[in-house]
Amino acid sequence: MFAKPKKHYQYFSATPGSDINANKRFQIKLDFLGLSSIRRASVQGLRELYDVHHNEILDGFYEHLISFPEFREIIENHSSVERLKISFDKHFRSLFEDQLDLQYIFNRRKIAHTHAKLGVLPDWMISAYTLINQIIIPLILEKYSRDRKKMMDVLLAYETLVSIDQQLIVETYIEIQAGSIVNGLGEIIAFNTQLDQIKKLIQFQEMQKKDVISANSSMEQLDASIEEVSSSIVDVSNDTQSSLEELSKGIQLLRNVNELLRTTDHGQESVRENVSELENRVNNVTKLVEFIQGIAEQTNLLALNASIEAARAGAAGKGFAVVAEEVRKLADNTKSSVQSIHGDIQELLEITKNISILTKQSAEDLHKGVTETSNITTALSTLNDTLQHQGSSIEEIATATQQQAAAANDITVRNRNIAEHAIKSKGISNDTGEAIYTLSKMIDDYRTKTISKNFIISQEDIVALTITDHLLWRWHIYNLLLGFEQMTVDDVKSHRESRLGEWYYGQGKELLGNEPIFKELEQPHARVHEVARQAVQAYNDGNYELAEEYLVEVEKSSKIVIDKLTKLREIIIASKEPYMY
Image (cartoon, rainbow, N blue to C red):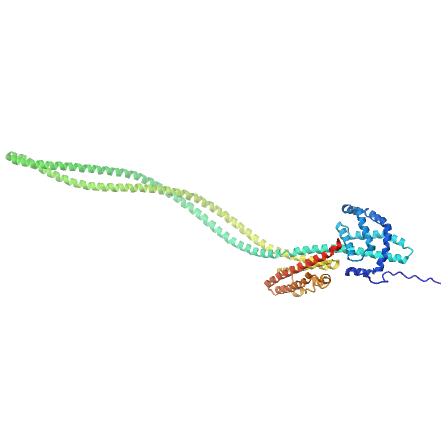
């Protein structure tokens, strides 16, 4: 008779799912692994096994660990084997004793965070669990070797708990890496979205290009004017030099005339003196004539007296009377002649006086003329010296103007080059702005299509992703206005279809639905999408000014959304803190 075949052992089919209540994400793991409260209790017997062998387990584990230089260095730099044994002992006992609640989860997450900070990678953490299993499993097999079913229950339940530990640690590592990448890329995108200077730079360079071209045109005109002025100044300089030479000759002739006048002045002084002497002599002659006239009158009187005496003498006096008469006649003739001479001399004296007056006036005028001519000569000489100096200055100015003309021509050439560079610079600015935006889009594509779909992301990092999304909304419209982006109204989805919308009406509502800030988020979020659509429509209609106004409104509403999301992220992080410390 044949023996009845043994029934195969089935672990997970006996009680599908899990009767242990936990948070949603952890509940899925428990249900999938089929860890029930009964099976959870089955490993509590391991506590006695661990109590007996814990020194052996801990010593063997850390003795193996420190045999690797990299681990020994980490332990020596950040802790000690004895301290780590205490922490490990506490953690291992929690496998058998602790409730599978949030604190249980966060204790494992804390371990992952601590080791991640020390640079211990997740593969080494998994290897560490494998090493522990190599120590524990033989002890389990040895203890329950007589009860195969009990051994399998305990062994698989233990392995399930260890697997949950590993999953939680690996998930935490993934969250840490995802958070680092998400937030790092978010910071890069946030930085890029703040590069508003590109638009201002492009506008500035457009203005600069126009100004440079205008300046170049003005400089060309100025260059021509300077050339003309330079030529005129050279002509003026040449004419001035010729005039100054003629002036010098004229001043020399004037000096000669002045010397001649001085000589004439001296001669006139001699004439004046001679005239004065002549006047004196005439005056003397007048006196002589008057004296002769007096003698004639006395002679006439004597002749008259003689005639009277001759008459008295009678015949004896006739001869004397004749003589007396002749004397009287002679005296009368003399008197008449003297009177005539006196008249002539008076006229001569009058003429002499007039000559003297005229000569004196002429001498004074001539002397005054000599003085004035001398002063004029001195003044003209001084002016000539000044003009000669100015003539030299005009020559220097002419030379400097020619140099300025050459410099202006050089500036014109340089301005022409600057104008060409300004045009190229504007093109480079456009290319730079477009490259920055393209880089932002590449980073965003990687962030949204790769990281957020292939990483386990914490709630706070999901919120961080939505914050970056709303930085990008304004960035997309901004670059649309620059011509770097092509968008239609259909590209702007409704706020419910966005990442934030899916989170807001899903997990976000479950976690934070009662928070006032959460409720305040809906309206500005919807407003961002509404105004973004209006901005795109206005731009595509060619109404760029209105599109600019909508851009300002998008930025304003996005800031409100980002502010509230930032506060919600802080609330999420704060809710985890009690479990982490």
